[in-house]
Amino acid sequence: MPPFLEEKVAQIKSLWSKSTLAQKILYGGMLASILVVGIVLFVLLNNTSYKVLYSNLYPEDAARVVEVLKKQKVPYKLANNGDTILVPEDKVYNLRLFIAGQGVLHGQGIGFEIFDANKIGQTDFVQKINYQRALQGELARTISEFDEIESARVHLVLPKKSLFIEDSEPPSASVVLTLKPGASLSKEQVRSIVNLITTGVEGMSPDRITISDSRGKVLYEPKEDIVNGLSSTQLEYQLSLERNLEKRIEELLAPIVGGRNKVIARVSAEVDFSRKTIHKELYDPDVTVVRSEQKTEESSKGTTNLQTGSPEPAYRGSGLSGTGTTQQTSRSSSVTNYEINKEEQQIIAPVGEIKRLSVAVVVDGKYVKNAKGEYVYQPLPAATLDRIRALVQNAIGYDRARGDQIEVTNLAFGVPKVSEKSSWMQRALKYFQLVGKPLLNTLIILLFILLVVRPIVMAILKPEVSEEVEEAEELPEGEPTLALEDLSPEEREAIEAQKRIEDQTAMAKKLATEDFERAFKVVKRWLKEEGA
Image 1 (tube, rainbow, N blue to C red):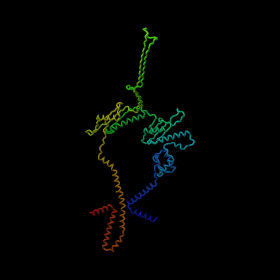
Image 2 (image 1 turned 180 degrees about the horizontal axis):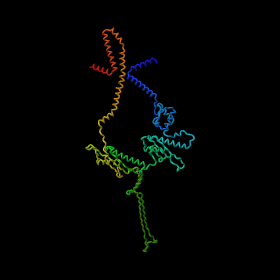
Image 3 (image 1 turned 180 degrees about the vertical axis):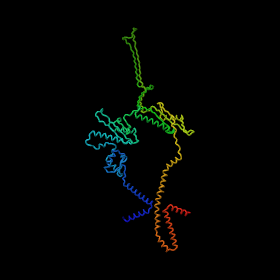
Image 4 (image 1 turned 90 degrees about the horizontal axis):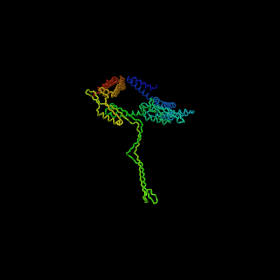
């Protein structure tokens, strides 16, 4: 072993042998702490930091990505049941670009990438099956893009095409959706899925599509179930209308009666879902308009003279004198056609019109204390109930003509529970629960300082005092005695005084080493005496 190492080892051994038990424990703890810190730093510096490469992968995509990483000999980790892949942090972006170039991320199922690798010798039947699988996969991937949908499966039935129209059959589709926990699809979202499949498959019609979730709930079906003469959509609309009216009434009356728990409203609505088209022709005989008018006039006028030698038809033998005849005729007619005012109306009645509303409202009264301190029920005044009835009428759009009915009743809901005042002990306990933890943490820190840190500091300070005492004890005793013979009495007295001071100093140091508390009290008393 080299000399300097031997010297260092000897120094360490000497220091260890001279150290007290507390110092040895301190040295051991410091050495152990240094070793632990060194090991932790070594592990951290040499540990590979992993970062997410892809997350929320489908099992098919995850398997293809893992296969690529194995070929590239890249270490990886799987998390979240295999749908998250982690790789070394310094290789994340390069691997993302590399995997994107390989085209291994296709999503759920098999899409049209099935035709990327053409195989020689495939029959027409295999090609049709592959096309059907690809179409199903592409539709499932598109439907899975909805935030509420975790996965989707699409099954298509594509009948064989026929040359004759009467022999051809339309395609059909069934969809099964796996929704995320707590998620649900609205009617608009379901309708959009139906439209997607209708336009994405040739010859598909909405009445050939069914959609359900993984729990067996039917989300869409061509022919809806009929319940009490109403389809499921109509029944849902009616129930929604009733719930909205009930909520409106309860929110209106809650501030008046003292809270939502003091009013109950129930609404029964009769809704007309029939489709009506009304044609009307209205005539007004008091208002007429001349449509056409026709007038005819006839007139004739004539005179006849008898000439000589001509027979007289009215001759009576009274002579040969001539006579004359005169004739006049006149006639007129008028025909007037009148058009009566006519109004034609074509009325299409709205679907879902309210035919009748029946409303029942129950409100709680008041509770007052009697002479015994007990709560007694007190009904609401009749004027208050009338005002509540008027408010409900205005809230629901009351119409007497259609036979709406409203009933407001005041009943006791039960004596309210009054919380008892907490005692001072409970309040103190609650306060202690709030502030006790910080105080306890502070107390633990103080105890750690007094019981652990302080003894260690004192153990570090004691060796210095011990070394000085040992040096004083190791001084040679013969030399001062020999030197005193050659000195004068005054010098001897000064040396002896100096020796007494040194002895007292050594004694004080020894006392401080062996009993530090006692030495501290002595010094404190000296300071007080000096100050006095």
